[in-house]
Length: 74
Image (cartoon, rainbow, N blue to C red; front, side, top):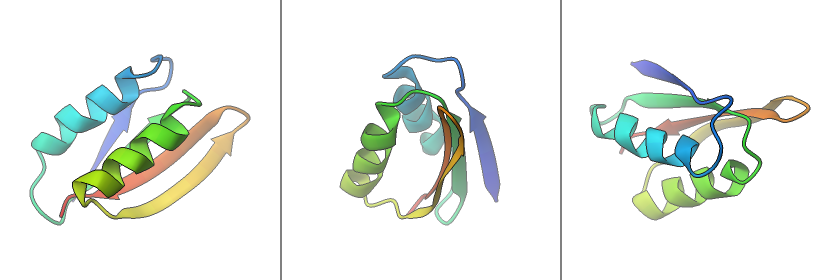
C-alpha cells in the first residue's frame, strides 16, 4: 500500500516531523510518498530513512523547488 503525504508549503523540519508521524501508522512493506518543497528536507528525509532502516525506493525533483521521495517501512 502507498500513502501520499503532501507537505508542500510546510517549512523545515515539519515535512520530516509529518513523515515520522505518518510512518508510525503504516504496516511493514507499505510505502510513504512524501511530496515537499523544503530544500533542507532533501537531506534530512533521506538521512532519517537511512538511520531508521527504511529503504528509499524513489527520489525525484518535480519542479524548481519541489521534490518527491518514497520511503518503505521495513
